[in-house]
Length: 234
Image 1: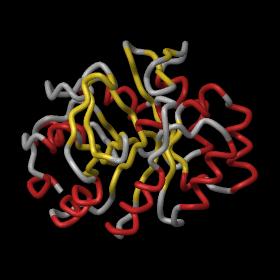
Image 2 (image 1 turned 60 degrees about the vertical axis):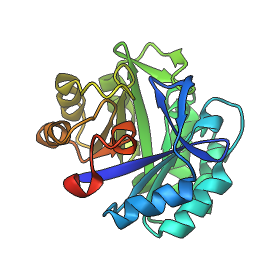
Image 3 (image 1 turned 120 degrees about the vertical axis):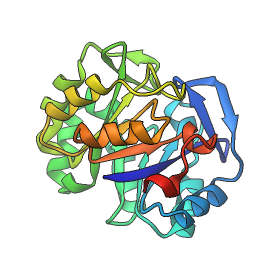
């Protein structure tokens, strides 16, 4: 199982939020420096999210490209990718080993999302973000709740993508642990790889995700606050 540090970007800086609420943000310095720190400690991949783009208030893609260049490891990038044009642009700017994460495009613009796969042949570079808020998929930076359940979205997109990023927004950033039952449910809902994010705050949580069949886990605030040491779990 891959253990993937999160590099969340706001105004060019590395931050962490609680439950996706920008008012709770806490800064952790220069994102390139943090990325290099995680790579030195054994990270083989990085999870980069442009929170400003997700909230519709700006772009940090140039900062993401600097992280990619400095770290020299594969990345998965998401945040604000809500159109076919944006998805193609990001895919073209990154390397072939990197993946792009989209949630809103798959939920709100499903016909266009299918076209991306059919025209670009990029199945192995696409990850659909399944952000669960009170049991329903949330989009647009977790601010809008759709009428879809996680398993329904996975069933609709499973044949079009490499895999899924499942985030339990209700526990995200709170460092109170995971909801293992929900993780097992979404892993069973698809034959595609599932990366788990949200609430992971101990080595036991990491192990529980592995036992549930997760392909990988994202470590965020617990890593930045020192509750988990990356070298202990990679």
